[in-house]
Length: 555
Image (cartoon, rainbow, N blue to C red; front, side, top):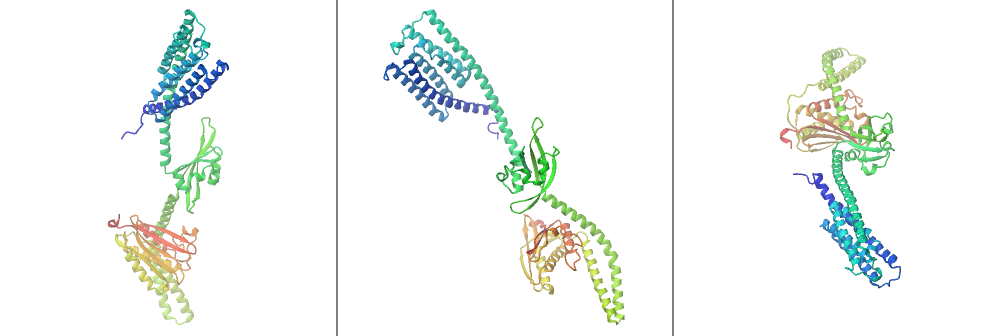
């Protein structure tokens, strides 16, 4: 479908009609005031108070003023409808010529002071109807002037009053007067036509330029509104003058709330760049807290704005929310660390497990042959620590396990239910309240590994809670993915520790190995899923494992 008003010509035509209507309105308003003042002044200067208020000339002037103003009122009413504008313009020009002719007739014909009104009518014709209007008004004015002057001179038209009878001129003098008037009319028409042509050309160029400017503005506005980056501009005093819609969404603030504020006050990190240090584009990062309390890592590119003379007139800041990218970087770095530790763990486990088993067996044999209580106590410590080392090696082997080879449909609700049953049988979790909201959720995963993940998370929740704590397990689907969520009401995790909880060997427990959550992260990452952690100190922690849904369940 073709866009409306695609061509500058169409816009120019519509703009021309609107411009003509505006000119008619202005000329109508000016004419009403001018006619009233002019007729009143004429009555005062010409008759000088000798004519009675009800005399014929005074009445004629009043009728002329009333008729002219009535015509203007009618034209103004018709203009509101916006139709037949050129006809109304022609009617105005004819009315101006008629008014000038009538006033010349009432004030003495060739002796009248108001012959110049014909020139005004010609100029008005040029303004309203361009070159044809100027020449048409000149011809009509000359005809009306000849009719009035010759008619009064030769008695074809009686004067309105004998006192206003013009002095009789000879034919050569009369011809000279008319020639002078006609020359003035022609010269005025020529100048008015030239001026009208220039105005028309300028008007068309202005209309084309305005149309181009509007299209450029619309394109600029569409680009700025559609771009995903935030854009903020500041004036030479550093005060924010513009903020696009993407910027409002990133900052969580409306443009109205930030306009007029100093950019360095809103973004303190940008102080040097906004104030012009270096004179070049600067790349900076800053932390922004939204009105809802969300922390966002923002990346800024601050560029100075300069005029044609190279003078700095402000600055522009283009910014993006880097939080998702920083999270991806953290995940990638964590995965690299886990991969490196996994490789070490695989070799270390094989090197330690066999000697450890031999040592443990030897100690048991020695303990059975000795009856000394002190030696028995020492052998018990050795065996206990050997068991601890064995558990550590076992965790190593689990952490360094290979990628799953038995992918299939895993019902998360069933796995979570089995784990809760096993935990319920553990004396260490006897006092815990266990709640479950297990909605069907089928994931594409390895069932054994999923069971290991859920078991580690539930055990971790038990160990993080008090003896009468509460464990809540939820399964379900969202956005085409399956999830299982484990929540506790324990002490929570401090924000500065959240970045390290998945690192190997990092633990806050007295007897922990620091491999449980690292193993969970490695397994989930290997299954193509991801982990979400929400924790509030003193209120508890929530782990959410998000896994790809089994294909039959997607959608």
